[in-house]
Structures are given as C-alpha cells and as structure tokens.
Image (tube, rainbow, N blue to C red; front, side, top):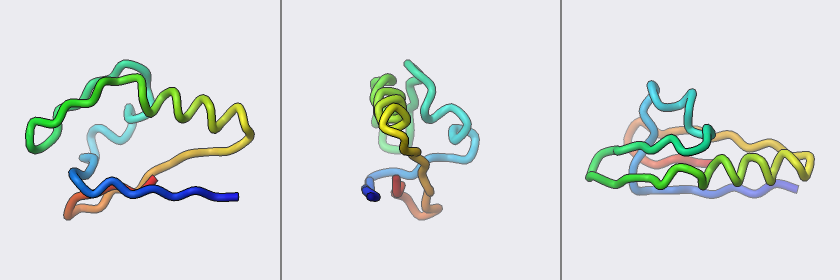
Amino acid sequence: MGVQGFEAWVGISDDLEVSIFQPFVRFQEEGGINGFGPGLNIVKRAVNKLGGDIWFESNAQGGVTF
C-alpha cells in the first residue's frame, strides 16, 4: 500500500533536507510560514512502526511530494 501527499505552498531548500524529520526543528521558509516542529517526526515514527518508510521530493518551483 502506498500513500502520496502534495504540499503546494513552499518547497524545502537543500540545506534543510537533512533535518526535516528531526523532532522540534522549526523552519521558516518563504512567505514567513513557520512549522511547529514535531509533526513530521511523529509521522515518520508512526510509519516506521507500521513497517513503512516516508520520504519527500522537493520541487525547485515550490511544493513538496511526500
């Protein structure tokens, strides 16, 4: 089974890719949108416990596919 999601607002810059799934890492991207931190870490842990994996592909023009 696979699930795919797309976030169209902003992309993830190359320098942030290594820490995107770390807990309580807060990013400020274009447009002043701030993340809260624990969200993607919680998702990653839940998916891993179910035997799955999560990754993302960032689009240079903006948007991220998980």
